[in-house]
Amino acid sequence: MYELFNINLKFYYTMSILHKIALTQIPNLGPISGKRLVAYCGGVEEVFTVSSEKLKKIPGVSFSLLKNVKSKSSLKKAEKELDFIEKNKIKTMFFLDKNYPKRLLHCDDAPLILYYNGNADLNAKRVISIVGTRKSTDYGEKITEKIVEELKAYNVMIVSGLAYGIDVCAHRAALKNKMQTVAVLGHGLQTIYPSTNRATANKMIENGGLLSEFMSSDGIYRANFPKRNRIIAGLSDATLVVEAAVKGGALITANIADSYNRDVFAIPGKITDKSSVGCNNLIRTNKAAMITSAKDIVYLMGWEKENAVNYKQSSLAIDLSDEQKKIMELLKKKNNARIDWLANYSGIKMNTVTTLLLDLEFKGMIKTLPGKVYCLA
Image: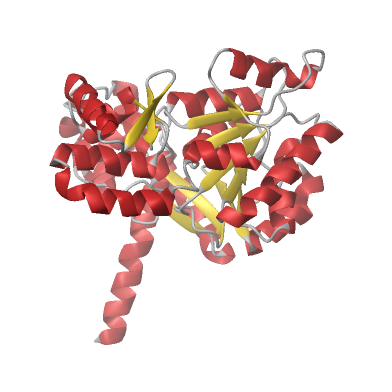
């Protein structure tokens, strides 16, 4: 009886993963509409079993989408991927699963599913993304290595994209300092691009990991790399741009991080250097704080004060209202938060949040920074 129970449990688990993968293979179904479909149907498997009449009543479901959902092609693709996952011991993370990265849950366009080969905790306490140009200079690489080395003392996980230049430099610096580092790929886990970074990727599986939203059969397509940048931004507490030209993937990542209300940092460079134009523009337009060392990151993230803040918060907690405690908890998780972010994640009206922040500032528990940004005092 016990063996039969295990067989049934394994079958249910396998079928569950199969339907989760299949959902991502329905043509013209993106992350936002996919999550809506699951919510209306009441589950992932129900998306494939619910009647056409019920599907028609779901907002945004067109005739072509209805036809795609009822097609068996997505399930057939999922079966092939399931074989690859089981053979290569790949972990899957569906947006409703407990192991799905918590920071990504705050991003509306986060992937429905992630494929992961590694051992790093994607919910690590401190995560920084480091991105930059593929055509990095000696200056940029030395700065990257120095900052990563200095962040080691704060047990920071480094996230990047395994690309040429600053990305792979950040990964290698993390490995050198025995820090966990994760690469978000713009293709399936069956491939490593660029191939020259394969040795680094293999080491990362042992002390970090490789992460992708793409199936193993998905090849290398230029359009997928900007798409994966939203995962790099969403996985992290902050994004650091070391070198960037006037356009490029690093700036896309920085802008996405800013849209997620995550902190953005940039290393300044000479105004005559093409590889510093992007960073200088981020700083000039107040989209990024200027960084000259890891100490600046530690200060702006409030990591040095965490223990002192915890003590101060607990000693004064008796004087705080429930709403004030909620604001303090949010600032503890994300120091240097904008007022609109606090209102959004607290569920408290903007005018009430303004009053709460003013009172907390009078109590000496928080302080105001330029741009309606608040941090723990």
